[in-house]
Image (cartoon, rainbow, N blue to C red; front, side, top):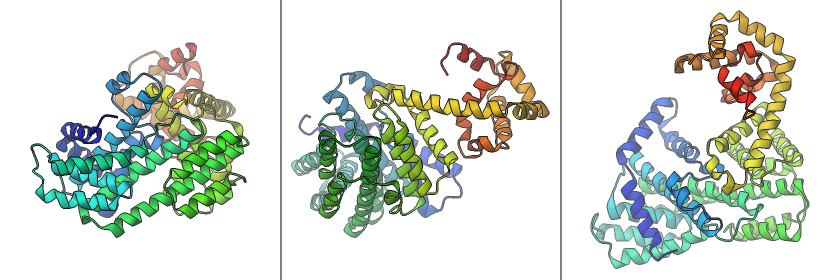
Length: 449
């Protein structure tokens, strides 16, 4: 990369950032979640933005223009993804600053971003030097040599986070999960810094939590890979490289390297999960890890099912979590080739369709009977089946009433879970033609669902 790329890139991020838009997003989030406590609001906000930007799924969403300019494979593509990730992290830190009434600008804001990135890389001395420099920095104008020099040092450390060494199928899931953990950690560092300044003890607690998450992820990913196939010399070398570059404590790295030689059972992974947030995070990342090689195998599915069982996650909840992951990738197909998940998405979609088709076929009489007993739903479905364009409110009402019917059937309990309505397109596909919305009937004939 070019010299001073980080300084110039952060300048462009700051220029593109709109404080007012950030305030609006945060206020909308608060209004939509009135039950969140003030203490938990920022943490929830960080998680919400991670999901919106795609980092939860290992897919930092850049603009369409960025994608178009980096269509080449190899280094150019990985560089585009890396820069997209840095932008998401910088935007997140700026949004947090505004959320806690610390909404700066210009070179001061840039210096604060550099501090957060330095702390993320455990460079406390470098962060202190940047912090001590802030009182002498003019908000606008040309940067002095001291700031540029310190920026180059942050740049050097941050470059280690980039995935510049190829795209091995085993290494990519681990790397993507680490990117998510790092982005979330940077958000927590920003909260701590903007509220308490250079509190190394607080930073240490945030980074220790990150290390526990990364260790847990590595154990789960190694176990997943071992369940699917025996680790050959090449595969062990890839994982060993990820472990060594993780900057985890030396004792932890040694333990993980020894674990490559013996299977890691799902129970051993589940036993060290501390809370529900960690549980959901772990399952989501393991599902992604299974998909990133382009094929969701039966052995991987069994491993994930066993892990979910030990974590006391119901099969319905696990199926919904898998569905949400697939839905995200289907909405952002521009990235499928980059992350080699297209085949796995199609495979999973077909597996879910087969399971739903069986459940709906076995209960079709009950479903149709309940639909006919609900006059408004019958009318809406009939109008839609004729090709009539329903209003947004009518489509929402049609989906809601159909989900309420499906919830009464035990074998379709997945619809009782939050987000179960994501599966409605598959339900519409299997309804009798007289009740099937015309758009889905056409889709079936074209074989695109």
